[in-house]
Amino acid sequence: MNQFYLTVTCPSTRGIVAAITTYLAEKGCNITDSSQFDDSETGNFFMRISFRSETGTDLATLREGFADPAKAFGMTYSFHDETEKMKVVIMVSRFGHCLNDLLYRWRIGALPIEIVAVISNHMEYQKVVVNHDIPFHYINVTKANKAESEARQLAIIDETNADLVVLARYMQVLSDEMCRRMSGRIINIHHSFLPSFKGANPYKQAYERGVKLIGATSHYVTADLDEGPIIEQDTIRVTHAQSPNDYVSLGRDVESQVLARAIHAHIHRRVFLNGNRTIVFPASPGSFASERMG
Image (cartoon, rainbow, N blue to C red; front, side, top):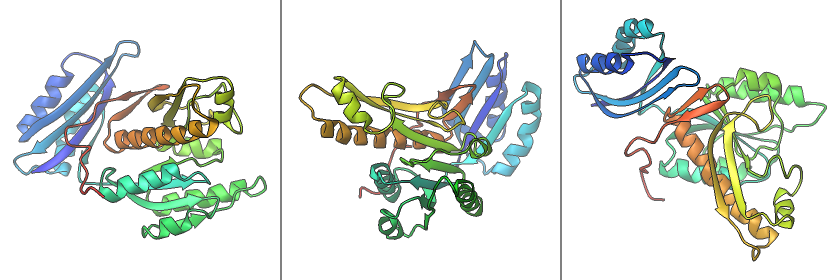
């Protein structure tokens, strides 16, 4: 039996859930997981449904037939096959902890994605990427060639038909044009000390101020640096007994975990943009299972 997703956004009103579930039942589909949220402040309704087609109804038929109920409620919607993997481009600079973590999760199937390219402005991770049979693109970025470099990056994204770009500690600011063009399709990770500790050595600054919580934030990239809609966050507690280097090591761990969870939510269509915020639904049963252990 084919397993599919349906995601829906529309103005909140009576009868939405009934219309959707009735339609799926009439098409021979069995709902296996469902999440919904009604935002009383914006008047928007959000829903994500996982379901099986038990009578062989395919996606094309489901999409075509859903046009009428969708129009009646002003829905923005999309159907997806759970077996289809998003194509992802990873961008990285000199900090490789997030990249290595993502490569491992991808290799064991914990992140069911297709990594179509890794782009870096440094050469440190060429060998590890190529050893995974993934194309590696070195694109040096300077103030003088920034526009040209970004054009090359966008060309790679277009040529690979990438659905998502992941900034795995890529330490270059993207242009407003690229952020607008890729809106909702670029995910970033950074420590959660902002805006208190900016610039170089934020963990050292945090240590010197006696910070007791180290955190990380993963968000969609917008033209407002590090202020895009947040997808995932987490913290870890530290004490006076930790050194600045401990802070850095612990920070790497939480950054890697938060980024992976944000990507997991995005690729399983669990994230909905709601103005400057996001709606993030819980994971469906079984979606964290890995194909193999190592």
